[in-house]
Length: 154
Image (tube, rainbow, N blue to C red):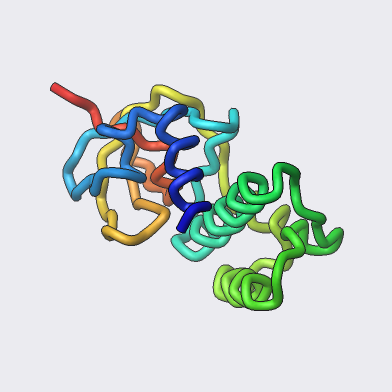
């Protein structure tokens, strides 16, 4: 519980907690804009499974960094963090579901988009790390981590 509270405190310092889709449930039809919270790359993925695998992997890495104050070791073949047996089984299952062989392979099924891109939410489940969005300028659809989405306030 203590780790979750620390994680949320760190994230709220870098995100606008009142508008970030990670903290508020952005709903279908909401206008959002891409934002950079802790990295400069925003992976926009073609499938829900790939996006979920990437978002979950980086969430585990960030929790580990907060708990131990350093990065975990990484498996050189999958590029996944080497954590406890339970977590590694979860990542293995997510990688299988995404039908990829590694984190690098997953990224090859995504594009990187810039901050400040206008999007609309097409699907966003309350307890999910990701959302399906549509670009307003081209109608392209992607799955993106909710940490990179800010609700537009009118």
